[in-house]
Amino acid sequence: MRHLSFTSRRIGVIAVGLALAGGAVACGPKSGDDAKSGSDGKPKQGGTLYVLNNQAQEDFDPARLYTSGGGNVPSLVYRTLTTRNRADGAAGSKVVPDLATTTGEPSKDATVWTYHLKDGLKYEDGSPITTADIKYDIERSFAPELSGGAPYLRDWLEGAADYQGPYKDPKGLSAIETPDAKTIVFHLNKPEGEFPLLATQTSFAPVPKAKDTGTKYAAHPVSSGPYKVISNENNGEHIVLKRNPNWSAATDDQRKAYPDTIDVQSGLDQAVINQRLSAGVGKDADAVTTDTNLGPAELAKVTGDKNLAKRVGTGHFGYTDYIAFNPKVKPFDNIKVREAIAYAVNRTTVINAQGGSSLNEPATTFLPAQASFGYTPYDPFPAGKTGDPAKAKELLKEAGYPNGLTVSLTHDVTKGDEQGPEVATAVQEALKAAGITVKLDGQEHAAFSDKIHTLKTEPGFFLTGWGADWPSGGPFLGPIFDGRQIVDNGANFNNAQLDDASVNSEIDAINKITDLKAAAVRWGALDKKIGEQALTVPLWHPVYKRLFGKNIKNVVISDWTGVLDISQVAVK
Image (cartoon, rainbow, N blue to C red; front, side, top):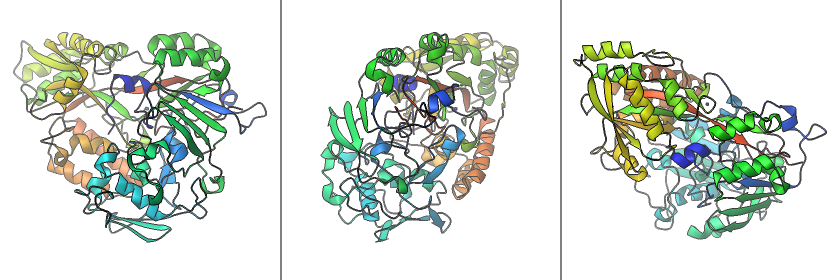
C-alpha cells in the first residue's frame, strides 16, 4: 500500500523506491539521444553519481524496506528473485527474473510457486548465494524488531499469520522449502497469480544467516547487487556505495552499474535540491534526485529555459487521488447523492488547486490509466472537464433534496497536500454551484489519517488517495473494495465498507490467473463495475517532473516507479 503524505506527494513515492495515463508512457526528456548517451553515443563506466534526496534512506535492511524492486538505492545492493524490467514507460511495468531463472513456476492453481537460482551468483565476499539465504531474509521480515516491510507474506504463506521470525522461532516457516541450494518453493494458503510481482520486494533478497547482525544489519549489509555499502551515516542520511567486485553482469541483465561510486545525500530541502540541480555547478552536474518533484512555479521557470527543459524527466506512477464516501453515514447512503457529487465536481479547478495539468492528469477511473493495471476507459458520470451542476441538481431532487443539502468534507489542513485545504476548497466551490453547501472539516495530518482509517470515526465524505505496490489492479482494488479486508480494529482502507459477494468472488477468480495480461482485462472490468456504484469520485493521477544534472546520461523512467532509475544512469 502506498498512501502519500504531503512530503511524499511532492517527492513522488516513499523513499525506499516508491516513488501515469491513458496509454501514455513515462519517458525521459524530449532531448532523446542528448540525454541518453555519451559524446560517442554510448554511456561510459566510471565516475561518481551523486543522489540528492529529501528523505533519508532509513532502515537500509531488506527485511524492513517497503519496496517493489524499484530503480533506487536498495536495488543496487539487494537483488531479489524477480525484479522489474529496467525500461522506459510501459515496458518498465513488466516483471522479469533477477536472481531466479524465470519469474516463477506455478502449480496447484497458483498456490505453489517454485524458483531456481541462476548459476554463478555471489555475495560481495565471493561466497555463493543460496535459496536458504532468501528463505532466511523472508523469515527475518516477520521479526517484530525488523518491522516495516510489506505485509503480504504474512497473509499469503501457509501457517505464517502468527510467525515471529527466526530470532524467536529458529525452526522457520514450513511454507517455504529449499530442497537444494538453488531451489525454493513457496506454499500459499490461496491462489495468487501475482506472486512474481510480490517476489520483487526486498524481503526476497538473500541474507546469509552467519552475517546477520539483527537490527544493526543496515549499517553493513552483505551485497548481492552491483554495489556494496561503504558507509551508512545517521540511519541512511548519507550512504556511499562502491562497486561490488563479485557482482557479474553475466548474471544480471537489468542493472547497468556505470558509475564507480554512488553517493546518496539525504535530508536536503526540496527547493535546495532543485536549485542545485538547475545550476549544475561542480559535483551537482553529476547529480540526480529520486524523490523531489518540481513544483508549479519551478516547473514554469524550467519550461521557459530550453537547456533546463532538456533535463526534466517525466514519470507516471500508479496512484489515484479521489473523494471517498462512507455509505454508512447519511446522506451518503443514498447513491443519488453520491452520483450528484460525482457530476458536480469540477476536475479542472481541483487540478489547478493541486499545481495544474502539467503535474496532474484528470481521472474518471479508479485504476490508474496504464495498461498493466487493467485500465479500461470509462466515465459512469460524464460531467466534462468542469462538472455538470444541472445534472447534479436533478439527481439531488430525485434523492429527496430539491432545495439542496449541507454536508461536511474532511481533509488534511497541511497546505499543498493532495488532500489539503486548496483541493477541499475547490471541491467546496464546485458543489456550491449544484446547491450543495460544503462545510470544511480540516484535521491535522496525524489526526486526519487516524480519523479516515478507523471504522468508528470514519466520516462520510473525505479526500484520500491510493497507490499500488506493483503495477496491477490487484493491490489497487483488493485493499479498497474487498469486503474481507475491512479492518475493525486497525487501519482500514475499504472506506466504503463494501462487502459485495460478487466483487469478492471476482477478486478471488482473478487472483488465480497467472497470465498477467489476461488478469489485467478482468481487473479493468471489475473497476468499471465498482465505479458505477459511486463509492468514490476519482479526481486525478499525479505526474512527476524531476531535474537531473548536466552530465547525466541514459535516463530511464518506468511506469513501475515513475522515478529516474539510478541503476541505468551514467555520468560519463
